[in-house]
Amino acid sequence: MVSHVAELEHLLHCKHENWNSLQTINLADRGITKLPPEVSGWSAARRIDLGGNQLTILPDGVSGWSAATVIYLDRNRLTSLPDAVSGWSAATYIDLGGNQLTSLPETVSGWSAARRIYLDRNRLTSLPDGVRGWSAATEIVLCSNQLTALPETVSGWSAATYIGLGDNRLTSLPNGVSGWSAATRIDLHDNQLSSLPDAVSGWSAARHIYLGGNQLTTLPDGISRWSAATGIHLSDNRLTSLPDGVSTWSAAVYIDLHGNPILFVDDQLCGKCILIGSNADNYFSQDNKKKIQGRYACKIQKIYRQHQERRKAAAVVIQRRYKDYFYRVEGPWYKKVRGNYLQFKTLRA
Image (cartoon, rainbow, N blue to C red; front, side, top):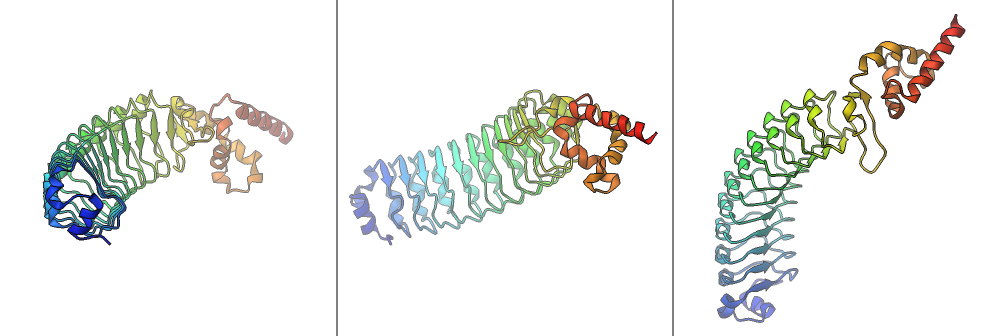
């Protein structure tokens, strides 16, 4: 266990009086349990790596790390951060992932130069308004925390191209998400979102949007602005239909709707609804919905009673099982069923 100045001097091969000359601090995975106040002397260090230790707190002396551009404190046991982290004003890379942080101080607003901020795999339940200061960050990763809400000041994340908030407990999003205009990847999978604000219209640059594993029942009109998205993940929600705005998803290559009670989608989306890494998971054409229901949905119930489903639900069950052939009215399965029906009708006559 390392916690004293003498022990750090031995690991760094440098007396603490000369620590202000060190350019690199490489002390990852050294069993360090505590940092002494003298670490303020690492004032010239550009890279400070303390990942994989057993630190539970940081001294106020970390304010002296004003020259550091890269700071690794991941995989420790930190439960909080001191206000002194405001001194990390030159840091462009800050990694605090895999700790036990439950909150952040307002002074994280001082991380104004940071390009990459990693706070994943902590225990954060909320974010301070100070996150507005992360306006230069291109990657903000907060996955696998316990966040239930976001402050409006996330609108300041206007430079972020990747925003990771998956595997949290978010129940809603603030209007501030409209500020994520530069984001090309937005990850909100496995939260508890039941709706989205119209402010998601601001995600016009997003190429990949992950919203699977939530509780969404509807989508707002604002999704019409997702015209640049090539991948839209909406699996395992509670969607029963899609709004008219999806007609603008012209760039979409795949749309994951698996695990939703949706049956009919627009013609142009039928071939884009897939299971990732699998075959197409085609849905029935919205334009042909009336034809399907009116022409022979009831007839299918009579012909395919061997499915042993309740007669009212039989058509839907069969449609789901044969959607790869059935979603186009003039497709092969349609013709086969219609032929069977005509033969059945002849026999009954």
